[in-house]
Amino acid sequence: MQSSVIASTLEHLIRHYGEDAGALTNAAKHHFSSAGKRTRAKLLIAASPSIAYPQALMHAAIAIELIHEASIVHDDIQDRTVMRRNVQTVWHKFGANTALLLGDHLVACAFRAIAEAPTIDHIRSQLMVALSQAVSRAASGQHLQLSHSTNPDYKSFYDQVAKGKTGAFIALPLQFAALLNSNSDAPIQAARCCGEQLGLAYQILNDLAPYHRPETLAEHEDLRNRTITAPVAACNALFSRVDPFYALVSKSEVRAQAMAQCQHWLDEALASARFHAKLLPQDSVAVIEAFIAEHLSYSHPDPLPKSNPEPWQHSAATATAEAI
Image (cartoon, rainbow, N blue to C red; front, side, top):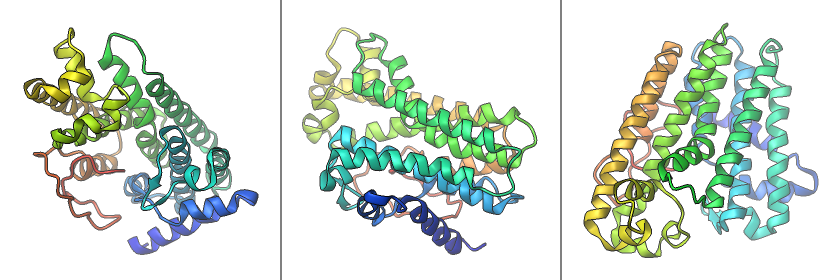
């Protein structure tokens, strides 16, 4: 199937499920009026080039994107995000109650998509379990971040947050691909570990993005809210007796050393992801390398946006902290 047809079909079916929302339909249509990049669905489809169940694969891709959309709608309430993909967020336009309920609806839609997938009765329960566990891990990671833990080990705390909040939904397409492509349970845990490390790497890059413009750091919400990001954890690890939030803003040498430590952690996360990837089918290994090249390659800070590769292709283009 051609990439443009896959993309069109996927988007149509995501809306078919997501906008079948009763009294929440207007809010759902507003949310889906600006589509996401569908990175997670692309990852699943790319890792399943010779799948025996093409319709089931599409249902699995739909479920992944619906659960991601649900997390976005809920996160926007907690983060008080006003704009998302150049349109007002659901909570800002319709209110927090509507956004909360729409997110719940989208979670239900994700499970419905798996329940209605044809020809996969032998793995349906495993897909359901993987989906439910990913939701729980993501919720736990988000809660941890909002709790602003007083745990003195900032790095351990940060890893828990990133692997849960970000890693769970990057691991999910790899887990689904392993289930759809393998007759063995062996790759499932490796897929989860690989995806969580990719999520950790992505979160580190995302956290470094504001540091490309140090003159604006003092006004950034992460610093103002005293959120434990990768640079904060790095500063704490290197200089345990200083206030990392103050030092990162006011001391350029401390900031540079913290960013270098983050680069080291990024390299470690990618090395771990590649280690676990070796236990996956060969198709997945190649796709993960392409994913790293496209989304997780660190380069010198550059405020100019990078051009996006064509969708559904395994591009080797590099990017820094690109939203996924």
